[in-house]
Image (tube, rainbow, N blue to C red):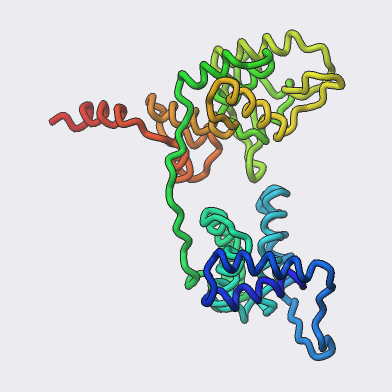
Length: 330
């Protein structure tokens, strides 16, 4: 209730105050109200319409049946619950202006980036599109909610030199095996953390991983990744079934955050800005630039849309020049 009241005040002042002033006002309100409990004065006449809760639960159930992860469902619930409790209307009474007003107030109150706001807008679009498809609302209000412009940044893959520097600066054989594994298989860090030794088929140098939406795909080990992984497993003395484990006893399975920490520290030592997902982008870019058809790259990454795959890839100008000469020479 308190946070909702602060957001309403900020929303009402957004046409009068600058962003910096709104930020200061938010801080003052939080400090003044931190020791108080805020309740409506006339609870007996206050009109509450929380019928949206049933629609929200139905939507989340549908997404769960589609195979959305627990983390994704948690994010959907969080963002939609904030919007719907703020607007406080039945879903068929919510108008585009209600959503736009909330998004402007939320951006200024929280100081979030346009990319974050765009992601939130996508959650709202999914929800109201789902309601429209089931005739719970006559019109989808998101159609008239302004799009969020985001400056596109070129996210560069690792160069061959950067990857080699990182391999030479790995602290342990485990770290070296893990970095090459991330590149060869192009798996997500959460997928790597879930893998067991028994999942790897060393005879065919491949394995099945389960990605987003419980979809499975086959990924592959190159020669160097296969060699490092076998060497790492040969020196392990624990009984943990996990593919990658902590160095210290009791040698627990490496978590997603554990893998991220190892990659960051290795990159820092090598003078490279490093994070696990960059290996996935690098694998996709190198595969595409070296001739793998985009459909096969998408299959390797587990993408259902080619557009998503192309967002991962940085097409080298030299490759464009080579293929221009090959296909458009005359």
